[in-house]
Image (tube, rainbow, N blue to C red; front, side):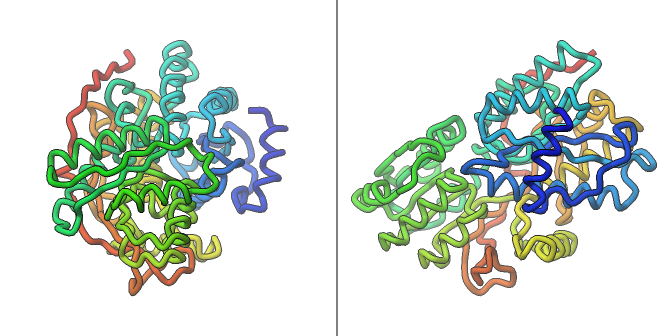
Length: 416
């Protein structure tokens, strides 16, 4: 990335509070960490808030002395506009700029392109290798047929999340008719396939009364889809939708007065809590997550409160962002180097107690983080709310990591 491009975008992002760090003295004094996600376009709100997480975490690391006895981490933002091809362009700029570690979180279609690019790049350029630290994409392929040494995933995959969600649904006797609605790309398709499989295995009595795929982030009015859901007689909906595709879907449900149960993967992201409250769906929208603001744990409670003070009451979303930075810092200090190969080998098999005091494992076989999950409903009467709605997430079921260790087809090849 050229300085001119960086500082041009830096100016644009000042208003979003994403460029609050002082400029570091020189590249030799820092270890560069790239954040490649949408900072413009329809997903920018989500991407910008993700960037705030990493800005906050890296500020804390640096304030505590940095790594390797005093080196600072330097966060550099790259706008991929949510597009796979643009992601490759930005990843190459990041590598040219001296980045060692790349974070990316939005879009499995983006992740699949990025992991292929980095695997090929690192094989061809042993002196400029990078690690790809994924904190969001859930496509199971990333830690199965597409696995490689350079990719580490700190979020659970969609199959595991659907398994946890359907395990909870299994105990809901009122559930009879389910409608599936998902975005038409690799992640949405994997949610659809796994939901069908899990329902068939765990609740064979349940009927799937509708199964819809729609274009990714291109639907402005979900009223026609809501009309189909109502006509199907569904009492429950499963969706992997995120961003505007979820908030607009829930808004349309509220406008139509549709009072089904909603089972989501991303119900906590920007705009969804507000849409749920406006739709009056108290206790009727569920999400499956590794953490939410009402999970007990002093460290995350304090972090969330401090973050909200800094960012106009916008809450913390990603426990895995915290976990990944903590584990990265530990790995760098353990091997005494920011060399991506050495750090990658240190991450493999690393066990760590996360910020809510739970044990997690970066599984060596496929570089998948194994962690506990929570099923939570968005409800009134909870201690910590979201988006100033007065409502927040309440745990209704906990699924331990020991029950969430899927088999993998990964055949990991490590650098010599």
